[in-house]
Image 1 (tube, rainbow, N blue to C red):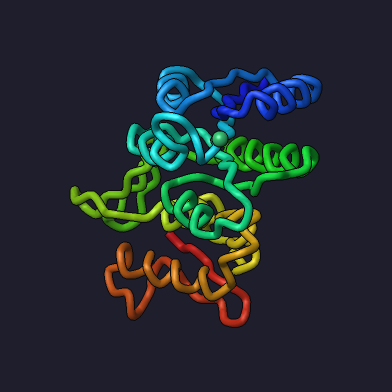
Image 2: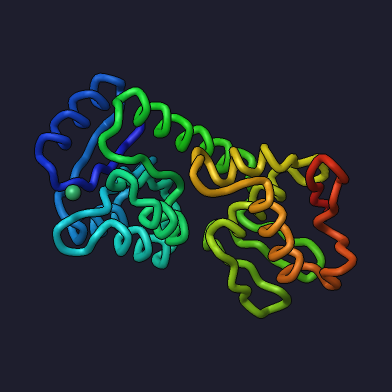
Length: 228
Ligand code: CA
């Protein structure tokens, strides 16, 4: 049974989504303002959260940020207004996993939800709670990275990219694969250059000597390989 928390204040959309998702076999709970949504999402276990940006009370960005700050790692699909590129960027920075622009077609929403659930399912199956390499400790449950005993400040995307490397340690990770798996369906923003930049940041933060990477190795013309 897959539990979806829908945080949305438009009654029409709540009804449409609830009907359709129920018909698809999901169990839907909903909250109509940001504070109630935050409370439910932090107290109960959901498989995925569909979160509108424009909400009464705490808005969707604040809900997302506060959930991540609390250590809630449930995948979040944000619903943004048409053409608001800044909304997408802000949402993804705050830790949302994907976004969908209103108005959207129902099959599109279903596809995004399935992709998020598949990704988080893969993750829980394959991932240890903690992973160590060199003097770096990655704590997946708490979304924390320590270098020695010092906590490192990684962005949500850096953390997700690191997670992907750990999951595929010892294997080639192409830039396209990283874009699909880490940046998801975000077609507006990232390019393969984005991947390079994030790998460079990971090296800065995690490599003993970022100029001569030992862990995050470039595979020329193809991508990267993480060798712990
Ligand atoms: Ca709304």
